[in-house]
Amino acid sequence: MIRFVAVAFALACLATSAGAQSPEMPTTSTFEPAPKRLRPRTEAVGNQAEPTASGRCELGIIPIAGNQFAVQKVGFGTFGSETTRIRVDGWGFDDLVAARVRAAAPGHAVRRIVYARKELARYQQGFPDTDDEINDFVRDAAAGTDCERYVVVQPHASRIMKTSAFVHGMGIVNVGAPITRHNFLFALTYIRIYDGRSFELIKQGATSTDDQPPMSQFMPFQGPKMELDEASFPATPSEAAANPVFRKGVRALLKASLDNTLPAMLR
Image: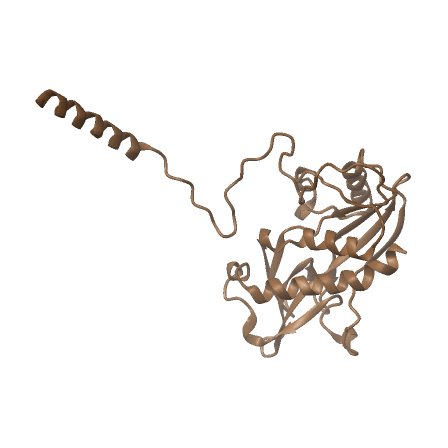
């Protein structure tokens, strides 16, 4: 009996020791999610994958709005300007773009084109910039999909007046002189439509909204934006990713500008 108890006690100690040596689960960061196990054939995708599509495709959607939000300060002088880009994976810019293109083309056979994230990684800031780069990217992404037209929606830039700085894509900017400064939430995108056979650029243009103020030409920069109160600018860039006002506001700007611009371009 004594031998049996001793053996049982030893086995229990071994089990406890093995459990103590097992590795801890990795923690996740708000801004750098832990990598997920990927399906063998999809690698790291740059946009939301759809089920395998078949049949006629009249319109292929290639959204490359991305997952970045800029927190930017701009001064009118040599100093006082800085930009930090943070990841906002859960804000769904590309998903929203795809949904608005579908809404602007009712009754058409529409397909979202899936591309690998590495196809964008080779470009500066993760986005094709020049006309040749964008054309090459579209050809690569669209290979084998056989759509009649392709719609590309990408971040756009606008110069901030009297400075060498630009706002780009989605973000918040604090701009002005030391005494008088203003905060603007912005969502700047550009639409390109390509012929699906020749990949000739058919139409292109920056998105805009109908509710631009009458004196918008005197604003610090052009494009979809809304002014926020003075206290709205985040104390640190990382705070922006957790701000529901920024998420709701920038998505509203993106939706409004796409809904205002897409229908005429798709006719």
